[in-house]
Image (cartoon, rainbow, N blue to C red):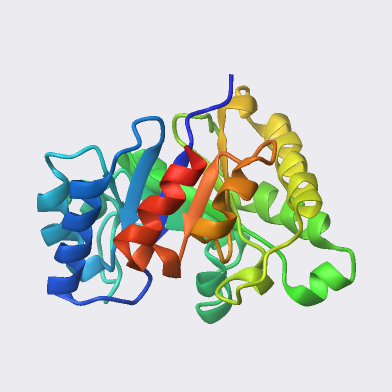
Length: 247
């Protein structure tokens, strides 16, 4: 039996306080699918107002990143315990924008994931290759190194989600063909089988230009258990349409 599908909206550095509350309210009021799990990840400064709206709904909350320390002299950083305090269930870690723009390597992601799990969060660990790596035929090798290097010990389906996001597909409108996605997701599942005792139940999401018109096709791929959605999560109608297509 396949794990329950998960659709996560990554709002990135978008919205303001009012529009964040409006978007969250629209999602809550119009969500209809009961077969999948929905989560949204607003910017840090809007977590509290969004959390208050989500408290009586089944839509879950997540952070876009966290630090690997509980507290201390880390100006501008957010501890995983702070996310838990605001009602977060998930935290996105290792997103390519963090790996590239903030020079976060696998060891950094691994340390953050360990801290997140210890705080009670479920990390959504992102992996994916660049276009040059894809062209060189190194996608599987890159993903293998990222997963094995970024995952801490003692993981299972209750405390881990993996998201495959080919970097060249993020925000470009381009997505790999179905066969390509199937090969990579099956490879990820096999790697998880080397690491986790219940790898078959760990959700592996696809991310990168996910839209309502391609969601159903993506969900038809074996070992795709949902999506990490970027720009299409900024409109309630699009986000919920993706959820419906993937349910």
